[in-house]
Image (cartoon, rainbow, N blue to C red; front, top):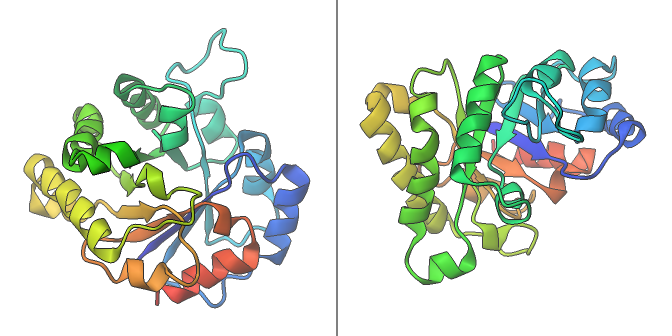
Length: 247
């Protein structure tokens, strides 16, 4: 089984989201695969409640606040997201970290909030180009993972997504060897904390300029259990082609 997840970022308002669902056809995607989309919060309920949504297509929220309620204008709480139909939460995406300045401590608190609300966290980790060039890949991704492992240790389920920042929206893609190396580092840490059997239940996704043409090669890499797709998930045909390409 593979996990095929699409992060729509700040695209597809309710009307465009509805059009996507009408056009999306998952018949070419193996029934063994898990499909998830992360629409913007304003479209979350429209996607989750649409009669045109393929029942295989699960829904997540792109970001949550660490408090369950309060005077936080413009924020979305995890209970609100769950009430709107989300079952997953995307935590620590590189754009949240590097554009909005979120810290490792912020990601921990958001993971905890997600778990309280019954959401399945998808923790994103990844290094910048400068960090890669300086040989800091392992240090960076393990720091980001370690920051939340205490909260995730007893979670019923969670996912990890490795997304090298230098490969997001740039057209550059990590090689299968790059992906396997980073995923192997993450898997080894999970095994240290959760045991081999426990770590085996945690899918590790690759994110970064995933397209129909490179999905199979990436998914064939050791320790790559799925993909987190950005721009190519905005088109229903492209997203379905990625799902079909992974076998």
